[in-house]
Length: 227
Image (cartoon, rainbow, N blue to C red; front, side, top):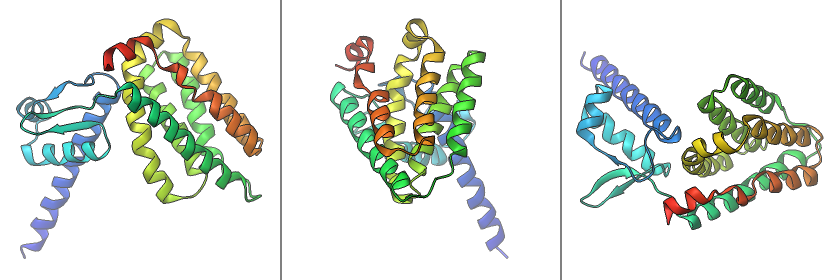
């Protein structure tokens, strides 16, 4: 007779953890919570209306994703990326995406491009509406869809934390990019990449990916912030 309440309680606890993860991840990737900012449990539990246990589990999961750092005797803070971290993450993203493209397009079977197409269209709509957060979410969905073309589940599990950590850098630069770049520029880069993938030529896709992921995109503002 006691098993049902326990199961229900377990489901409720998992739901609270998932909600806390989603909300914290959204605030980190949108720049609401800045790199290096301390995450105070008392404040977060009051703000989210939850207890400490699901919050701590959410922070643990976000730590595994590389979005927060647990510091001995100093609590938890939003992760900070050094210039070297960013350079290494971009390099790793490039290696993983190249492997995905060669796997997806090297077998002679055309992969399903619907996920890529949807992400580009979502990005275009967000750019037209001036919705920077929605455009960033579509950007993340697009790159996940590129890697998902390979049908390689372990690759996707390795790739997603790399992409999430790079979103820390992107969130930091979001306001500067809004000043200096048209939202359409990012859409056009992803549209070119989508068209290259649709052409099913792995070498062309990899060439476009190399240009697309150029680390010259690292802004001086961010370099100063992370040194």
